Length: 87
Image (tube, rainbow, N blue to C red):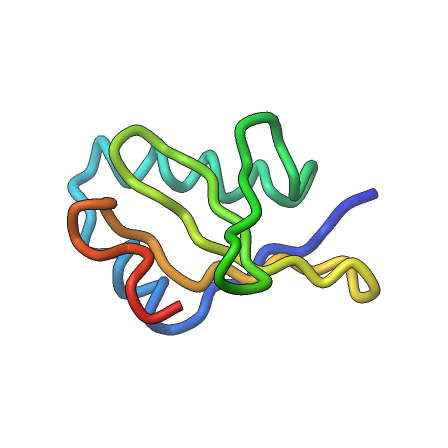
């Protein structure tokens, strides 16, 4: 079952600001969400209906819509940058 992966504008901007080496690592992890939106190591966040995966030192926060087979990336940031604040 293939899911489409979409990015919110804020997540797109955060992704574009990443250093080149980090960008490719995070990008591969996000594209992989289309194949498996709940890969090994993914955690459901307690404070919201969101999930997170790790990509090196960065976190990718996303929502899963199973009925529409869609993953929406909400945020891409380092944990030290307040990744989970405001969710």
